[in-house]
Image (tube, rainbow, N blue to C red):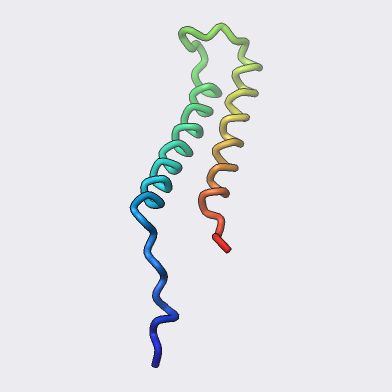
Length: 75
């Protein structure tokens, strides 16, 4: 039996590092979007709540798009 077909090539160190950085930024965008949505009186931001809500939702949608780009299968 030939088991060489079942062995997947290991990612390089650079690919693993970029994957890890991508996950960190994914979580960062999601948390930042949640902060903009749920923190009522944000210091240093004089945006109305409706604009902050829209910006928070936009950040969360962007983090979801990044998630699907990270997990997509390479051809």
